[in-house]
Image (cartoon, rainbow, N blue to C red):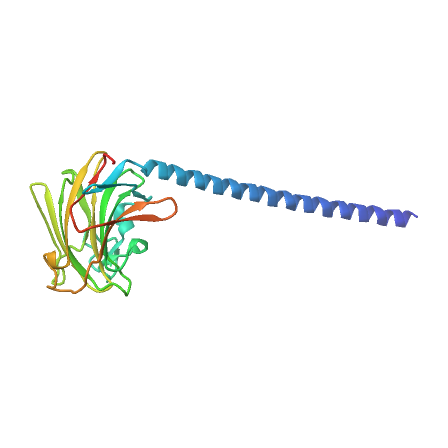
Length: 257
């Protein structure tokens, strides 16, 4: 009897420990799930806050068409976001050394035979106008573009020039006179060209007069290829929105539509 009671007591204690252990494990799982849910909710809230912060009244106007756009947003500078690679570390536009002479940070935005522009805002509130021509993908044949840009704030600056370096293979030209900027770009197969002008401020009106292909200054001098599409990129709810444009003057403004 005493031995049986002892075994029963031992079995009872063992079952109790097992149940308590299972309950403890369940509690940890529940806490973990709640924590994960809270983390996802916090992330969603942060994403919404970022979207709200960048949903300004910016607009792209071409003729009678007006389209509101939102900047792309990132925690890094536009130079880091664009991620221009070149083997010239002293080049102020170079983010990382490499031999591509192209943008590696905008691959998700690149499309063959396409020229695009968009607004980019970093976590410090610096607003940049970014130009992106071509694609590093194999389907890109290169091309040429000349932009005449008026209205860029005098206290801003080109934080990225793709390309601008001392070397025999740098054909791009960057000029400014009386507040009007003119850039001649030309790029080869599976390459990009472009740039970023930082310091737009809260109020601005920038006008772009584009010239592509045979109308561009450097067309056919070094590279072949045709630009078929010109688009304005906006930060959409789940992906990037693109507005198709014609090869005519465009105004980007903080006044909205």
